[in-house]
Image 1 (tube, one colour):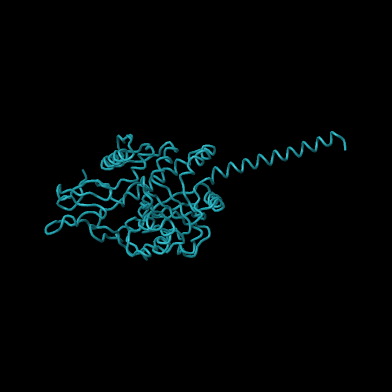
Image 2 (tube, helix red, strand yellow):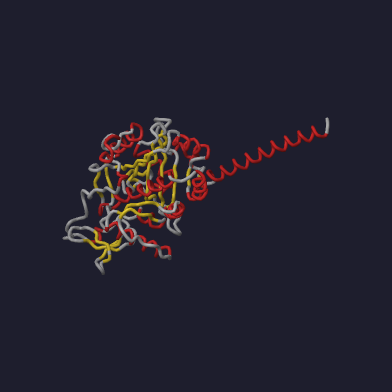
Length: 392
């Protein structure tokens, strides 16, 4: 064999090796970019304990989304935001179903508790089991994001467009921003006006937290949380492929999930196979199907079987809770803006022969020296003649 022939073969072999190296490096880059997240592999070990029902449709995947309010020094977290994320590949939709954190449920091993106590007591596995047991769902996976990490995510998006609708919302938003700054030992920019505007990470985080000062309590808060999620989703839709890849690389470290890389890839492909999926949101319980119970209206109580039927019909039959998909927002889609109801019941209207301390919120307290109350977040308020809270 001539030297030139050996040289040509050697060049071909080297070319193949170089090509394979490029493919390997590209694959490694993609893997690290998209799958270098906080993977929780322990959940699959306890899958038989999640009480998941049989998957009714292989084209629909239901995932638990937990927004955690973990403060510095905490070793356990309450899931203040709980949603079922339903990825519907057949209809090209992603449906968000908010579950009220104060829902009275039967927590296995603990008895009657608030729904958000499940994550605190047993982490994602007990929280998923509790959702499945009470709402008849088939969830075996979860995604968790700490509220503190939401700041980094929104800032990476260069902010999100939010409509601050009322003066009450603006006042409460700025109060929460101020308190958050005190907690962090920093000063953050307040929001100057109502209306549609770009909120940065801290402002969006605080917008999703407000619930006091005549802003709708927890009912409006879960809708504001969904508004922030939708605004983030809309921002992502406007990005180029290169910008999106860079964003994924930046944001992945802030996500913890039980979904493995081999599960995430087909989930993404299925979700976009018919184009960009639409995003919808609703919540259970529905208007008129719940009431407050317990001391100081501690719990939100409703018929779990009815709620489970609403969830099943929405996920699998595409029937909006309270109507059909053709009915639009009137049937239960609140993403057009915050739409909350006045509570059907409230605190006692008279304190005559009533121990004032009994009117304090669970986790809060009454100061007999000043006559003021403190809620579970430590914020001070008084009660007017109708028992409504007036925050200072």
